[in-house]
Amino acid sequence: MRVLLTTESSLPYLSGVTVSVDAQARALGARGHEVLVLAPRPREGTGPEPVGSPGPAPRYAWLPSYQLPVVVPDGYRMPVPLPWTQAVEDARRFAPEIVHAHSPFVSGLLARRLARAAGAPLVFTHHTRFADYGHYLGPLAGPGSAVTGAYLRAFWAACAAIVAPSTDLAGEIRGYLSEGRRRRVHVIPTGVDVAGIRGIEPGNSRETAGWPGDAVVVASLGRLAPEKSPMEVLEAVASVKDSPLHLVVVGGGPAETELRDRAGRADLEGRVAFTGALPRPEALATIAGADLFAFASRTETQGLVLAEALSAGLAAVAIDGPGVRDSIRDGLDGIVVAAEPSADRPARLGAALSALATDAERRESMAARARDDADRFSIERRMDETEALYRSLVA
Image (cartoon, rainbow, N blue to C red; front, top):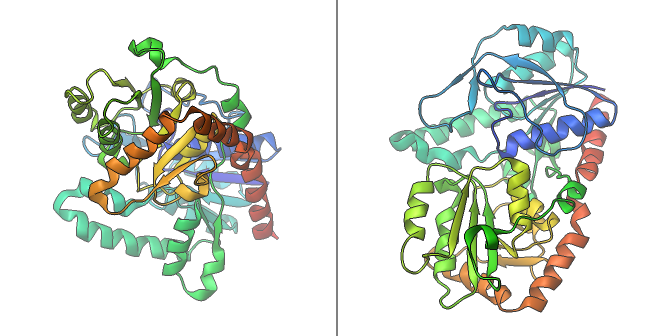
């Protein structure tokens, strides 16, 4: 099939969405499909960089782009909302049989127009809980959320299929749709390169940070921003006194300065190391060398890092939230911590981490189960499901 993927952001900017689109494009190409990715052009002097996903590099049609001066991270290029560009013309000539949008906004509207012109089904993967980012809009958060919600419902109505990466999100979307349209929602989590992650040479945070050999290293991975709740992970480690727990924080973002300041206080001093933003292979190697993985974000559509951590053979401890139970099997390969009451959340997360830190046999049993069963996250399995969806729509 000829598959057009459209996206609002692209590599080399690293995010769950850009990694997902790259993985899907390469996996489809490896299966013999023709793939074109319509995406905002990276800033001058840069281009897509491999992030470890298997398969051939996809072909791109580059949309004119710009960098917002505020709100979005450095390197996140926005597509210029023009009705016609050479990239759009290239996508039209590609004559797609499937158009798969990974954003509902500028690139999503282009996807809808191109799908109509080609007479092709429009598929949309809902990667982001947009309402959870309203704090960036300040006093406009309330009206912005209402407008975005109405817009999304209108966009969903134009789609032949809506892909939700978790059962929680699928249920939420179905709740907004009429009974006849609910069957258009399909749960297909983003897959990961399980074999590649298993083969990564683990890093050694103890050596890098100068920690003792008996330190139990907890890793967290993700953008350091309020919506990801990284401070709760630090507070969780701080809540456990006289503990072997040490924390390596992988990632960068607007909350990094505040987090570093918190880590410098007496109850955490010497127990937290920050790597800053790393290339994805290095980030995965860092968490692969840890003993446990901690996750506190409650704004995810899936929590892709949980699948990556479990594939790396780490027992995971996470605060209950959207998509968490699709990844962690509580008591088998990790622990799911109750989210409420919120005031005690860090203490509960810390207690769960401490329980595994002091019980090596249980921790290693969970890690082995995570590693052995990780094929359930494989990109091959997800592509089987995606291909089946495409073929049903074309038929």
